[in-house]
Length: 130
Image (cartoon, rainbow, N blue to C red; front, top):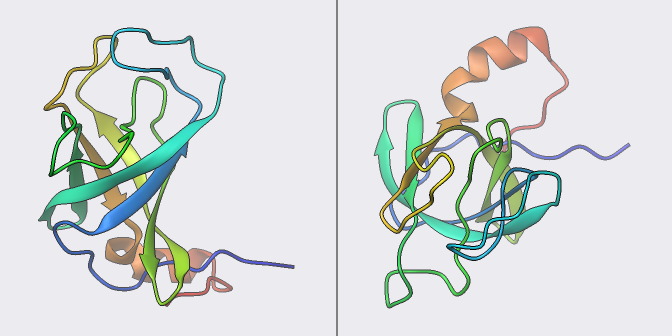
């Protein structure tokens, strides 16, 4: 059996993340209905306690090429962080600010798994943290 490692540390502002989900997807202005998997990269813009945020940036020097952003129905989707030559599960998407009309500047937050480590280890003791 193969397990996905969980990130025990704290991400930093500008850390690159990979995320994906089955919510609404497509280029800005041409959204598709939920049900098709979409994924890509973004960067952490802010850390506040047990949550981290990302922003949907317009194309330019501060954005990822083909940057992605969670949308309606993506809550619960994974957020992975690249550390030590591997992708590590660092969070779970909990909020999106765009609803049905995504725009540049929209924000999304994810719950950092490390902030709930004690509870997770108590209920799922076989978890692997790095």
